[in-house]
Length: 319
Ligand code: UDP
Ligand code: MG
Image 1 (tube, rainbow, N blue to C red):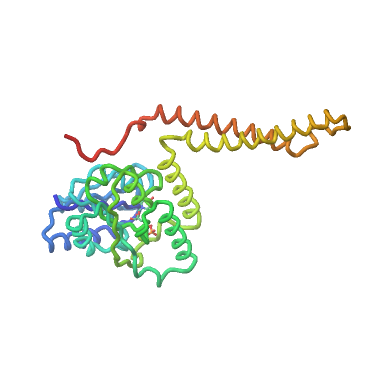
Image 2: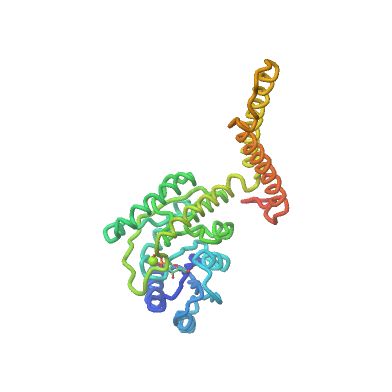
């Protein structure tokens, strides 16, 4: 099979038929063998019924139904598990992404040898308010910096194409769909490209991701990913390091406090209490913090040693 299209959806009943028709037209024009996997993420409208009708008419339509709304990442994950095509395309259900981009995206994977090609919504900027474009720019700049994928402008574009191997070897969880290129890179797929894609205003319904908290959560997720990829398998390296620094600072302060006290005692001058020195408090705090960080490191090591993932490495070939 040439292509699997994975479409996560949440309350998109009005768009589904049109989207499927459009995908089908493009596939038939290009002679691709394909399947479309719709993942119904706990929709409360008629989406499931529409999907049932579609499947009765078209055998290439498959659907997964979540009992409740889990989010876009779990939806993609389950779609990826089922995908059989050599190239997997993800696309939003709201008709904002154009299926006309599919042949070129596929060509970039098959002929140019990319592992992952991400869309870059080029004609989006005109319509959006500054309150949306500025945070988006900032967010993408941070993601580029942290992930080290310098050539991506738009991490969060719903339209992406993957080599099948990629989707079978990454685990999209929580809200990590925003950072799939980063996940792919961490799994060792580093030929990551970008293609300018057409993007339109939403036709029906309204956006499922609103408000400022998505940016706060987005940044927190980025920090988690960074931490997991850098120290996930060796937590002691970060906590042990911080703990040692703290403990050293505390130790130096103890020496200062003890040293001054000794000097006073030997010279026989009247001496103030050690508790009146600021170094006393610095020493106290730093040594406690240092010990705790160290212990956190040990606990982190215990946790990672016990985890199912402790010996999970990406192997690309074997004889
Ligand atoms: N979506 C989903 N589960 C959710 C939220 C969204 O499957 O909990 C789907 C949604 O139906 C759409 C895609 O994810 O197909 C992108 O959502 P949306 O268009 O609302 O995001 P935006 O384009 O505004 O960033
Ligand atoms: Mg959308």
